[in-house]
Image 1 (cartoon, rainbow, N blue to C red):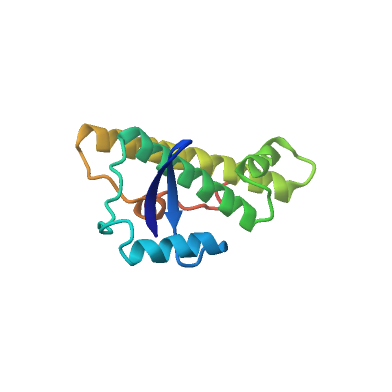
Image 2: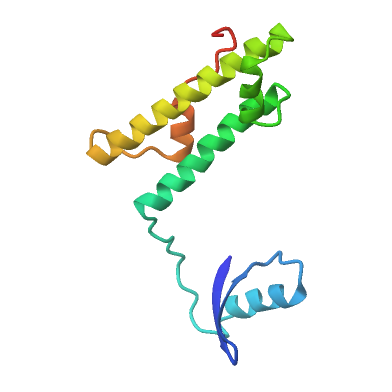
Length: 143
């Protein structure tokens, strides 16, 4: 992918040019950039993320992890799974709801402890994948 800055009558526009763009003009722009028509193509330098941006990305990943686990058991998301914890009509669903609610609490407790430890300099910042891997496991027998 090549980030192209285009200056025109309506201001400056950013465009991500890729060779697989579904639009011909996008593929053409990519090739013209590769051919040097707009100058030298610089090495990509990823943006430096703020602490807040990193935390937002990690928080979203944790939410997705919780939802994915609940969906594996047929629930819409973690909130749906937890909503069964107080419903005694079907004991199986209530037990799963209790287990999911307990697990969700343990996950968030762990996550916030990691954030605090990183902020205090007591541990290194994990990758998102590493963080997800170290979160507490779902124990469906824990209800």
